[in-house]
Image 1 (cartoon, rainbow, N blue to C red):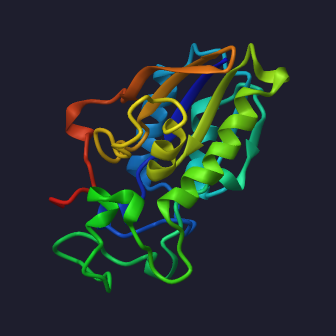
Image 2: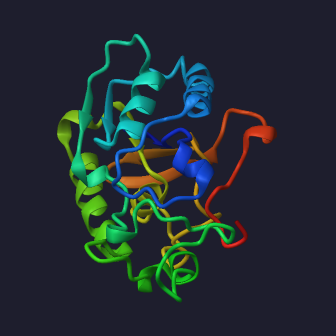
Length: 215
């Protein structure tokens, strides 16, 4: 089994530095462009199946990547982004900060202790639901020889990779993955190996990290 785990393309809320979570934002023009560049780079990958978060930005990214290939895409709620609850839509950059908390930095610095807004979800809860998806996927006997696209979200990508990497203490690794970044995982006999981490197929001028402590 080979998995291509991709974060969605850019949205206006990415650019504006707003918490998206499970809000159903759309790809903007640049997000569509980045997805098309990524699709061109992956055009020779023999995908058998796609899974996607039901969020429009992830599902649109999956459809662009797979193009006119006759490949089914299954949506799964376990691939949704972390819910920020009442904080969704609020600015989280230094120049537009609207989050009513003195501890939002925990999201980056101490993610397992991060407390979201009312009605939100913790990162351990996200890891639990994504682990159930991942375990079910890699042990499905029908998928053992398949090449599978998984289109999802930045925090969800990192949660999925908790099932792959040896170092589980550093949840964010190199940080929030770039839009359309791809992590490639091979699975043999239930053992997962990361083959490529946060691979992007566009130039440095398009590499923008919208969610950091410095932003």
